[in-house]
Image (tube, rainbow, N blue to C red; front, side):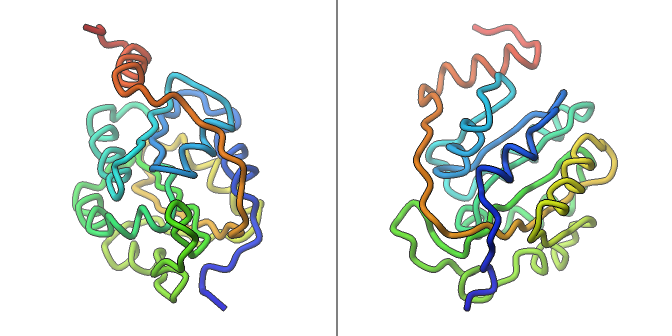
Length: 197
């Protein structure tokens, strides 16, 4: 049995995290994480990464540093976060208090055929994050944990925080967000109050 075995429904988890989101800015990792965020409700504060495997946490870091008065949430999968594992070290050194990372961990590479990921083979993302110096780390396996995490997302000083969320490995129908990079960039900039050129 993999260390990532979970029973939480990924769509229910993401919908719960994004309920009453207020000023929350959301970066979603490629593939299923973006589908989940889109399915939870389209919002101009969502920035979907379509092909930046391993980059979601670093994009979230840049956004958190540039927008310190806004809470930032990265929602990504275990495979994507494992690809960018070194980002946790950089995030820990910069200590953005407004950054949260939710890793939807099913122990598989969902976009390439459901092969076991390193997490599925025993790597513990929450232990890696803690060892990197992330001050607030949790391992969530129930909806009560999701509610506790959601309550902390608006805190601009308590982060960075990383939550490994144990989701089930079942297939979920795709809900495809916009793919036009220029549109997404301009919409996000406009949402932040910047002129769009």
